[in-house]
Image 1 (cartoon, rainbow, N blue to C red):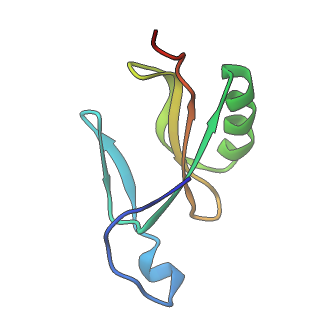
Image 2: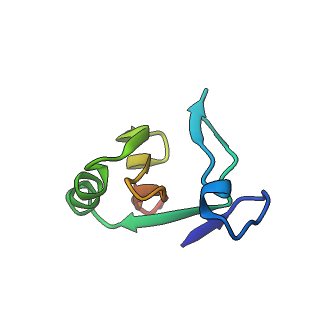
Length: 92
């Protein structure tokens, strides 16, 4: 899954690289694209997080959240912003 965040398009990647931060539980960004990864277990997503976090700027540390056993955001060393989370248990 990927998120297309409204912004401006430009053929110059540096011009649209932008920034992403988290403030009071909200994502503040001028990036036009996020990559999302959702896994079934905390162990699975932790493995992805640790690999992507090498050289990355952490936007939201990977931790439990009200909606998921694990959620985090980072911008990797190539400038791609990733949203990682663990699928919550089914309600019922």
